[in-house]
Image (cartoon, rainbow, N blue to C red; front, top):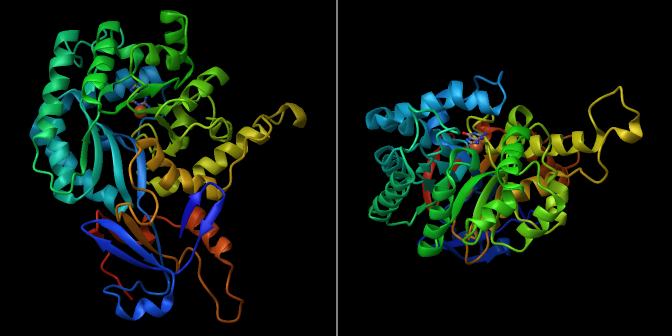
Length: 432
Ligand code: GUN
Ligand code: FE
């Protein structure tokens, strides 16, 4: 099952031909199924690999904890001290060895990672992705602002932020990566953590290398307000002025964009990593996904580990439907119903699933997210026996109903096999 567009389900039975990791043919004639190498059991559904556009890898040990503070305090009290511990590369390796296979088992075939500020830990993260076979966009985090960072966890100055970013990119590009899984990504953490000099240098580095950028954009009231106070403009226009939006920027959150920001983003490569569970705790508002999509902006989904409490991109699908519905309805019963919410904010499961797959691929401008010729074979086999059981005495459910059950009810426990670039990288070991 897949969603070629936001409003269309493709649930046909097909025979796929894969050559060197690329899908080269899709045959819709079941008669040709006789000669296949590998046939999925009838209860299994194949979907495109899930694309998680926003993960903080060094926050893996903190996942599911510490949601009692707003963003700024959360960063300074919990997160920055944890990330500082990744100066110890052995500690980093142990965390990556837990995290990467776990995320593959959750169906995350492509992960867009912020590492820590440490070059060695970042290279070790890329090595772990290559070893376990996960596709990954990876950035060593640049953060040098003396007010937006603690003394124990920052680049000491802009020159160091730039030199270490260059060195990290050099090390990632030098890795033996036969499947081209790793894309170095320029990662100024967010405007409050970076000096103007560093933001400008990261923009220049993007122009020089053509590499994509990732950062946080208009995440919550505090961060959005900081940028308005500092520059008298929004994150979007400031990031653009620093040259950070020209090579395909993956912008996390974006809950507080203006209509003008959306119009600007619609003209640029890259797009938005919508992290619906994280926004519950740190966004101060619901990201209006329907409005962003209607404005022509590319949008995919992210867990924001550990800002969101779940490692599962599947879990973000119903979460994004739920939060959009709450935005439309409003949440405060003390307000009259007509004034409670925002019109036309809801999205359906097709749109949410599209964001988790093809939408994410469009943000990355990568041949992923759909099982069609010319794209890489990154895929997940899900056993629908538990999430969408069939009963002999009831008529078979239409495809759209089975799809809705998949999108709302399937969990990582239903995932049976995961492939990246044509290689089987996870197997639940229960083919029946
Ligand atoms: N903004 C800057 N850093 C972070 C982070 O680690 N998590 C989230 N959610 N927002 C951030
Ligand atoms: Fe984040």
